[in-house]
Length: 371
Image 1: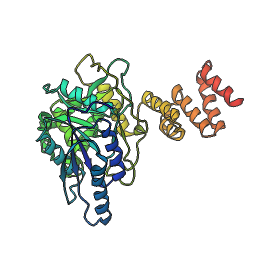
Image 2: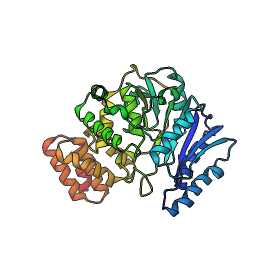
Image 3: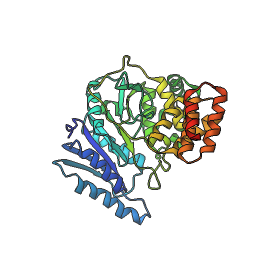
Image 4: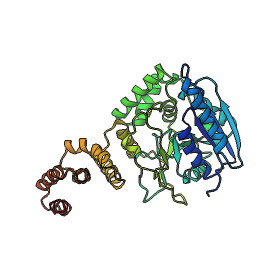
């Protein structure tokens, strides 16, 4: 069993007892002595919510079976995800100087808690750092040389922060109306497409501020040049995709690969600067058009997990745009073979050989099909 986290742990729950149970099971591995629970209420006119909200709260009562002081913030009316999380974070950080936050569908790898604890302590007084995240959108990034890196783009799928940083959170995004602030964001992001994407999100959030809380949080960080710590390996798995979710109705391919443990002692990056390359790759994933190298990496992982169709879908559009992408072509051929489409795989490989006649791996895979 891992050591209990020093930082307070908070779980946000609503009406999904099954995913809540999985998160509590993960938290049980570290047995925090204090657990904050923020429970939203049933939606109006949804009779089924009454029972499901009750069942989710009951999971806390029954499954938190270690000595633990459970502190509740409950609502009997529906606040909605944005209000519930924003109010809940503020409530916890009024009482704690730092805290770890998990929504009811974000299952952390046990080392997530130690990782958060060590980062929260290391940068407790460093106002350049605003947040710690457990999710690495690329699953692995520079893990051979460091344990984490700094970025602007974090994730709400398992995170932690300090009271000092959250004090600048701006739920209604009123500062977005200021042209100087928008210019500052444009300069900080540095990429025109990234800025247009973020500006569109901020404008929509400004018009409807009660839909989400994480974009206002990201806005606060970027306007203040606040850095997010991202682990070199993914430490959180989101299990909440599907009809019961608020925003994650369809599971993105980037969420298909599971988490893995962090190794200690932590190795900090050589410089305390934003890793803009990671952020740009993260951005491309958000748009659904990852770069070829990231797509190939994910494709290999998906094939290793036996998810050939997902690997094929992932690489297909990029490969069609550039059939000469060797790694994507090989992944596509192997996926087609796994899906029992050998003729289609042969066509991909034959096309690749016209571009690289001496490719030994391609020739070997063709020979494997022929045999």
